[in-house]
Image 1 (cartoon, rainbow, N blue to C red):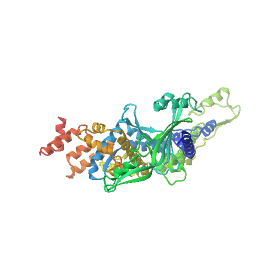
Image 2 (tube, one colour):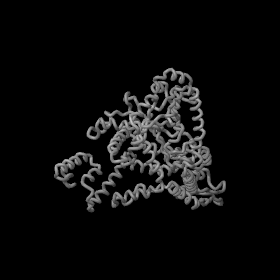
Image 3 (cartoon, one colour):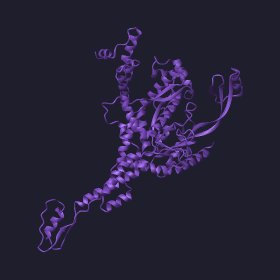
Image 4 (cartoon, rainbow, N blue to C red):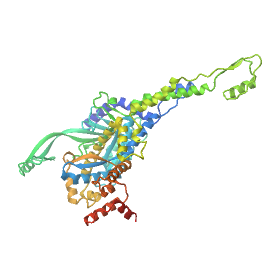
Length: 565
């Protein structure tokens, strides 16, 4: 497609996505404002304060959000790859180690939590995973980025959580300097100079917005299929002679042509197209490198603002009720303490009138008045019971509507509870918001698929061995693993394992309790493995060595004593 055609297409997609997502964006920005304490509309707040009444903010939404995000942070999960068949366990173990290495080096668990926080506040959060060549110009480094949900615009007609049916995804990157653009597109220097020659409207001086568009373009691709073993290999561009030569290798080989989506990426500054190429990660990664998290996902909803929602959407009105009723109640209490005085014009002299104005609301005041004149105080107007009831009701509604329960923390009776009981109590508290964490689990699975694709695309066998260790994998095994670009479809499945110290401690206590009650299948090595001992690898190695020598494992108490010495 010509540059003009691509520019027109991207412009049309951007206008479509901006228009369709506009109502969602307005509500999402209001949600963020509520979460951070900006809960009065400016005109209403000004009017209330002009009338001499307070407009306080009692941010109960913040506490609810902190409880949910804190629970997620305390119960973080690691990605664990499992083999589909027995022979796939080796691949699964290696991929688990490689993914853990990427996530740890990139502080991925913290960026994942930031993505989750965006989702519970405004409904959507995004991660982007890419290969950066700044430090390793040959193979690159897999990097994880947290992206603002307002930077990313998805095809509004997509209804799949993982964006697999999205025709395009647009990310707007604002406030880039000319030097940054040149570093991103070093081979397009002339086009960058052309794009930055004209100042963009409504932008800061010497800064430009890069529009990055990931989209699908359908094309015919040929596949070599081994009908006996069920193996499928993408051929790419091959001649008729090459096809005939391949088919002669075995009668079980067949060539099929299929129309498949090819991921492409285009980059635009102003009206200048800087890039329009195939995805740099194809064919190892056949999806967009963006990972969505959606708190409350309803794909059947007709409106986009209903299709994805966060926790804040449903509790803004109860929060407004709390703010208004509490402010009104405090205003009544404050004003009733200074009830009005009524008297004749000549009841007090000038000095007495000044003292009355200054000390009239204080207890024990002594007032002199002229004989025959009247001076009395009106009784204060007390607040009604309904005002205070409404304030409490607003707080209760926030908890009830959001479904957030303090059982998430399992706050009571923790010392006397077993690890399993603690877990059950937390699960009970999580029931009403289970969907939030189910969607988080799905997001983690998408993240794993993207990381695996980029590992297969950029890692060398030597790098795999260096990360995992020679005792875990050989160069030949690493090479075979990296060539298996379809492993996520046939050989492995994605699961999770708790990385939380709290849950690991609960698991250890449960196993210890079972061991003490005579459950013989749990060995001392199992207990050591489930613990957080800093030197448990040495202890496990010692146990294994003793077992190989036929001595049998030492009792747990003896191992601990030896380790202390």
